[in-house]
Length: 196
Ligand code: GAR
Image 1 (cartoon, rainbow, N blue to C red):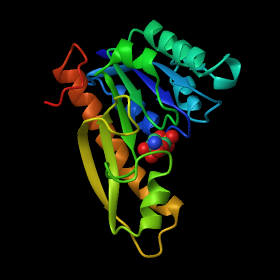
Image 2: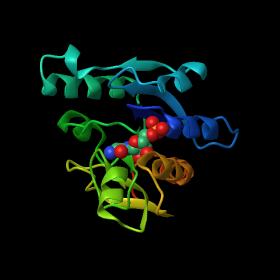
Image 3: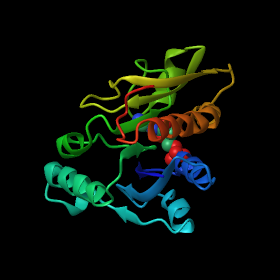
Image 4: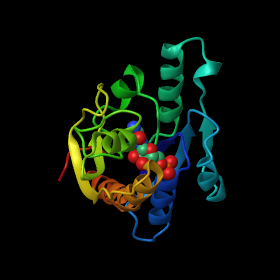
């Protein structure tokens, strides 16, 4: 199977979905390492599966550029064909983009190009949209500006809190991410994130 690296910051429900899918005998991909920028609780999913984990904290580095380089070096050591940002809450810098350009995907809890950034669910609620969703994109140098690979819509309910809405988005986001990663790793053994 095609090796993928997963980057997380949070609870790792999307990571868990990828791990579950990768354990199926027919899976086109295998998770070879999980990297976080903090002590993310989601790292437990990787540890439980016996997959190498690493935490690369911005605070442990001289500056942002040093952290960007350390992150890129750690990802490169895993030799993945595809890098999956699954709730990774930092922008990836030039070193990672140069090494893996076109082979990094990100999942976002809104219908891009609406509501990019760190608070996609909160911003959609605040704007009063009736439909939001999840988007998987190819990562470029911008903030959630990359090419859209897949999207799914979720209805907003009048009584929704940010938490409720995010949970319903995650329920459809996880299979969407698994589907995109499966397609990219099965169809493109070179790992290019070009949609098929
Ligand atoms: C996901 O909903 C993902 O789309 C979002 O963080 C959540 C992580 O959940 N990412 C962003 O907001 C990126 N801007 P998880 O840790 O349970 O997978």
